[in-house]
Length: 295
Image (cartoon, rainbow, N blue to C red; front, side, top):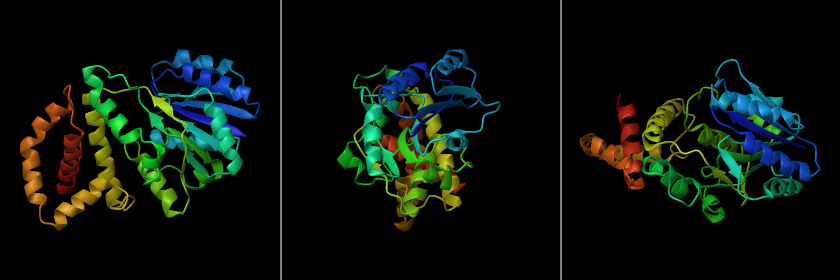
């Protein structure tokens, strides 16, 4: 009835699987939990203990295949019609997390996103950018998510029919961090597949340092430029692309880009400080995207 699929890379997922196994066992349904490690080097011994749980498996790929491809492999491996994708660095907020999804299956939805939340306690200074961004931009309530269902969903906590995941696989040209979720949901939207939002969140636990998150953002923007050139993500799916095109259309691009280059270092210092500004983060992303498009 339910296949829980967890891609892993350098993360200890034993506690997550233990919680999921306990919850799903109480539901008395056919299930499996498949954990697939993308050739990482850490926590492999700890994660091998997952194989002791009934209907659970942990295995390691011989070589790294990337964030999109590993989800496609997991979907192909699954034996049940309902797939629950969870990121390795998440943990259910509620004790009835699995039960909530099983109850939702009675309505036979094709795609359901349960939401994501972050701890309220402020982390150490070096993690503030990722935490602030997550709380403000990702941890959205139902009404906020329903304003734009396809752009506010994430694969980190996603229930989906196997037939949909197999018919519209993740784009394997994306091997690094960034925009694979947006592209996936854009494809579903273009094929008139509704994304239902419910209140069944997971905590996002693993916070990168601000420096690491900033570098990952740059990688993501490189992906966005590539996807835009390939006509896979358009102005309708990305605010950054829309803002870039607006600057060009209003003849303000040269002025914006000149100012951005002058202030780039100062903005970076703010973003890794104890008071990172998400407004400046948006400006930085637009500026960096513009620099890539200008090359």
